[in-house]
Amino acid sequence: MKVWMAGLVLAAGLAQGADEAFMKGRRFAAGDYSGGKVCVVEADGKVSWSHPARNCNDLWILPGGSILFVTGNGVKEVAFKDKAVKFEYSSKAEIYAAQRLPNGNTFVGECSSAKLVEVAPDGKVVKEIAMLPQEPGKESPGGHAYMRNARVLKNGNYLLAHYAKREAAEYAPDGAPVWAFKAPAGIHSVTRLANGNTLAAGSDSGTPGLYEVDPSGKVVWQVTNADLPGEPLKFLTGFNVLPNGNVLVSNWLGHGQLGKAPHLLEITRDKKVVWTFDDHENFKTIATVQVFGEGDEPLNGEGFH
Image 1 (cartoon, rainbow, N blue to C red):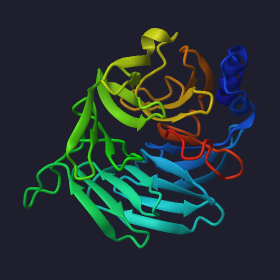
Image 2 (cartoon, rainbow, N blue to C red):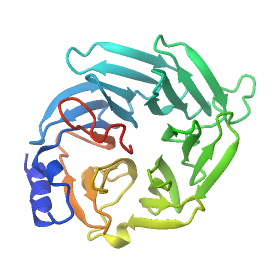
Image 3 (cartoon, rainbow, N blue to C red):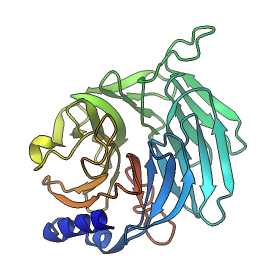
């Protein structure tokens, strides 16, 4: 796998600031949006596990040996060992976000229906918030670009990536808006950091990059192609903040960019690329990534993912 080895050579040349444990042998899970699958990739770059997943934009490594992932119009949890389906939810709406909650339920962000849904382990909806007026006979009030990634925060609020509006926004448990950040690009993924700031990944509808903003909405850190040689950032989608503060970001290569840049880049706080994953033989467009810790457990606990 020449492309994978090229990524390791790059990492070796820029080792200062890199996550050495990651470089020496981290596994990761990734969703290949255009390839229609979710995969586990070993430290040597080889795919050791895969499962069909149409248009996967979000996934989670779950404690206990399974993976939760989006399937275009649904969400599944599948065990690594025997590929048994442990949870399943389906909808007519486009779905780009899912998250397992501490109470065992699963949060689902429905884009085209503009709904935030909480689903019990048996597949029954136990909570539903309509973010836009639901007109009778109209199944898609949000449309294709209403939101991408979405998260439930520890305070019970919701954090949404509004793609079309180029906005990251926080809402109270009843759906009332409480905070927003206008970005220079359509936002695909967003998370709340431990320091209270918000990290957002911007797409190619504007300036692709990572943007960290404080509670007042001020950008306190960012990285774009202006900071990196070769302009490798095409359409930033998912990310995983590593324990050393570096960000592992998925670089979606759709919209005519197939094979033209790395699928994954690890970027330091001082804006250096210290690791890349460039396997264009087995992957088309990686849209989401999360790193393993020990065994089949996720790195960094819940992670900033």
